[in-house]
Every structure is written in structure tokens, then in C-alpha cells.
Length: 352
View 1 (cartoon, rainbow, N blue to C red):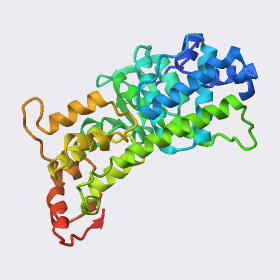
View 2 (cartoon, helix red, strand yellow; view 1 turned 90 degrees about the horizontal axis):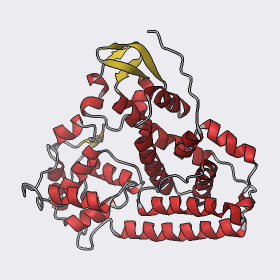
View 3 (tube, rainbow, N blue to C red; view 1 turned 180 degrees about the horizontal axis):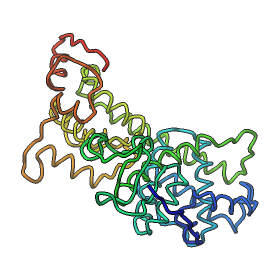
View 4 (tube, one colour; view 1 turned 90 degrees about the vertical axis):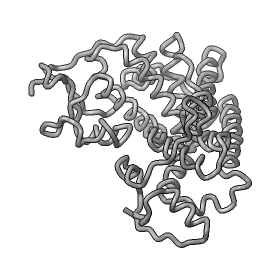
């Protein structure tokens, strides 16, 4: 397997779109700007933009386009990480990471393959371009990086369905970008959590912004928690089968659950009597929550749109195939488990 050497000349536009690149961070460090400098009129835009980014994560709204000035954008990105580290709520960090990676994937999709591979290297994905196509593929990803970053453990993403050779998984351009999106989420989360802020003094302007976003996030968390269980659903959580409880827990923790898990949870909740509005409220915890899209999907599953057919949840066999089963419950369907528990029956299960 012969792999050509990758050389890329980065432009200011690249720094603007990909402010996480080491070259961009090094440039910002050479500017020697501190948090105290952000309170000056000349750099107020940096602080304002960082606040906008954190609030977008709170409200699950798409991030705005990068600043026209690439230095402003790099500093805004770095300041956003600092704000997230000070607030230090993992759900909020994940929300930002999801939104940031989605914006990244929109930009990188239009890049040439050489630059895509270069950028993915910088966020930790072991990936290569082949000197010639093999079975229609010319990109390979290290198998461990592939497994760590696949968006869903089902269908064409399952390793058993992939062409693998000596520790390399063959992928196309779309797939490698999707893997990069997942890798960037992890990259951003790790960068926030690794920041060392001990003894860092905060100027009044930064401290005030931290207070504002902390207050907004606390209010959002309160709304999310109040939406978990409808007031008339006594014993709701206690009767959940382990698979649905696990999906709910991941959602509650702010993790970006796969589409198969979202369908499984939405169809299950609708079939045990929750309304479409109740289900929408539950999904507000998702880091990429978009009410317009979520409402359409939930109402479609509920039979309120399209064919007017209400969908049933996956059977246990399907849940196992999709990698969503987390225990052996001795039942054939999650609904069976739920209704047995609601009737006071004991349903024993073992962790798988």
C-alpha cells in the first residue's frame, strides 16, 4: 500500500473556518492576548462572539458563520472553550461540540481530499489516501479510529459490512467527513476538559458573561428536567425497560444519540401514552435539538403526518441488531416489559 506524502499550505480562510488547527492556535498565542485584553473596545467582538457561541449551545441553535477576521474567529473559539471550562457542565460542552462539528462538516465537504485528510490528521484520525483505487475506494481509516468514531453501530457502518485490509477500513469521501465530524466532537470536549485555569483572574466583563450564561444554562436545565416525566405518568421511569432507560440516560447526559435510538425512544414513548408534545419535551435535552425537524419526525412517528400510520417500537430482536439492547430481560418486546412492570409484575434481567 503506497501512500503519497500530504503537504498543505493553509490560508487565513482555513484558520477562519478551522480555528482548532494547531497552526491557528499557535498564531493566536503569538499575538499574546490575555483575558484582560478582551475587555478593551478593540477586542469586545471576541467576547461577544464567544457569548453568542455558548448561548447557541444552550438553545441548540446553529452556530453563526465565522467572523470575517480570522484572528477574531480564532480568539473567539479559544475564549468559548475557556467559558465552557469555567461553567464546566458536560452537557453544555457536548452541545457546543455537536454544533461546532456540524458547522465544520459543512465547510470541509467542499475541500479537496488532500486538505480533508490533513485536517483529520490534526484531530486525531489515522487516515490515508491510496495511490490507486481499490474496489472503488481510495481512502482508508485505521480500524480503531473507525470504530471509535462511527456515528451508528448499524447498517453499512457496522464493521462486519466493511472492506478491511490489515487494520485499515476502506471509506469514501462522505464517510470520512462523517467520521471527522464525530472525531471533532471528542476533540473539542477533550480540549475544554484539559484546560488548566487555576489562579486565572477574570476581568469584570468576562465574569459578568460567565454569570449570564450560567444563569441561562441553569434555566434551560430546569426546563429540561421538568419536561422529563408528564405529571400524569406516575411510575413512568420505574417501569422503563433497561434499553429505553439507557437511551433516556444518554439523552439526559447531553449525548448525541443515533437516529435508531431516537426512533426507538420516540415510538416507545408514544405507544405508552405520551403525547407528541411530551415526547418533544424529552428530546429538548439533545445537543442538536431542532424543534422544527424534531416536531416533524415525532408527529410522523405518531401517525399525525404522512401515511397517518402510528409506528410501533422495535422488537427486542431488532434492538439487539441495532446495538441498543443493554440487558437480557426474557421478553420479546420493550412494551411487554413496560406493561408487566406497570401491573406490578417482577421482570428479571441480566446485563448483557
